[in-house]
Length: 237
Ligand SMILES: [Zn+2]
Image (tube, rainbow, N blue to C red; front, top):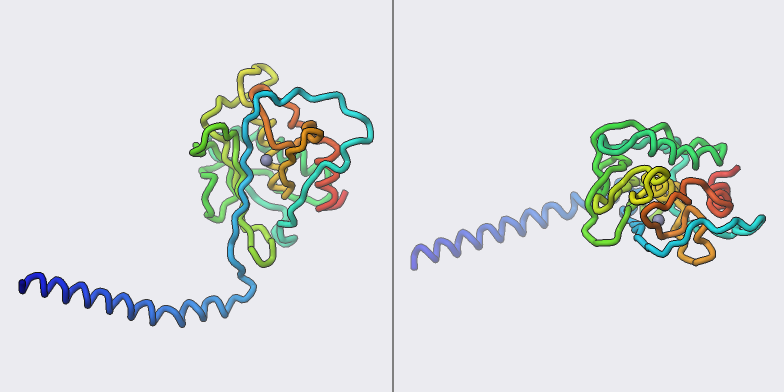
């Protein structure tokens, strides 16, 4: 009995201690927030690129059509953050990723990205590094995922990461239609770094920002009229 009483006392003391710590911390926390009124809550936007085996090959491009095919959410890079730096994980082909960034960067006079560096990086975590890496996303049928963390008040981007799912065999599909083409998927995902959203309407299926892909697909390696129109509407020609 005595022992359990002691135990109770100990529990009670721990509780009082905890309550005191909470009460003491509240004003401190408030001061921290009050001191940085511009720091809004960090919110996360996640773009999940799914597989769709019946995605058709590139249809013939009708001249002058497709200009309307882009979508922009308003999340943006702070102009003071440009050009943005990014790290390509050691396991990922640096040249392919750099080429995929450059195809976007070459369509606007604004310099958006420094050339990426190779290093150790893990996508999917808010860690002050804009990272691209292979990784295993828990759901099936997901080819790649791009995460954008941004300030919920200002819409300014805090960090962007892209994960390429190891459920798939990656490579260069121009020589082997049985692989997931890294450059094809990277060019689409980097469109999200440009802050363009996915398109799911069938008529937009020729655009790089179309939200589905499949093994052997390479049509997203090049930008189409909607992708370029979207980019220019955000960053200028
Ligand atoms: Zn996407």
